[in-house]
Length: 228
Ligand code: SAM
Image 1 (cartoon, rainbow, N blue to C red):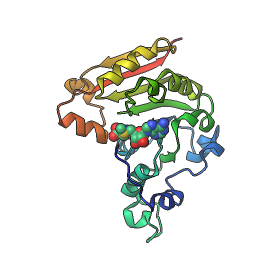
Image 2 (cartoon, rainbow, N blue to C red):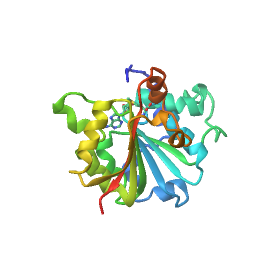
Image 3 (cartoon, rainbow, N blue to C red):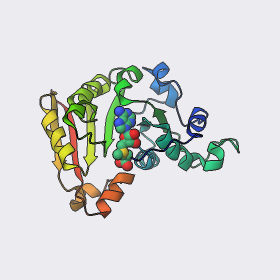
Image 4 (cartoon, rainbow, N blue to C red):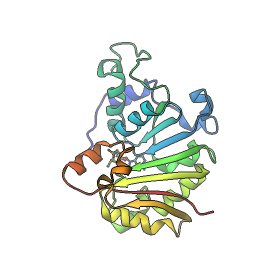
């Protein structure tokens, strides 16, 4: 993702009711944040947030948390939901019908996930079009790497799952190789999600998915859980 420094991003994010400002303080208490004990699903590397926002609208019985490292990217998600004027503080942010009550965002690096969520606090993790980090020496930065799988292991429920989509075949093959040595199990996978009408019934497109699928790139998807 091309990044620009957007001067207003920090202020908008710091004053947004959609963004949890001190996520580590909520560890073990996310139920209280949402005011219910619905399952919590998170998207790591949510980008501009279309996927998780649409999921939240479709599934009021689930609580969603989108995680994004860069303020300049998260800003786009916040502005889409709050409206640009509200996000800039020109109008008081109201509980607009536009903002799902079961959705929050966090601006953080995913390496800190175990400091933000207690063991078994998360029921599902979505990874969509994660950065490929093509150099071998950067493999541990890839979100489906064994290092990140170990972090997910610390926060996921015992029967929790990870769903990973990408058009990057190299990254997908890498993930397929990481699963078993890291103690995970492949529940399903496809190298061409969009050719499968059954799987597409429930598919929600991310911004990157729309872009790459429209170029004709096949989209790969896998679902994994822990070996028992
Ligand atoms: N998921 C979105 C989609 O499919 O349209 C965005 C995909 S974009 C290629 C990957 C996003 O993941 C970027 O916005 C990047 O900043 C974020 N990201 C990458 N590594 C991250 C990390 N360690 N923690 C949090 N966000 C991360």
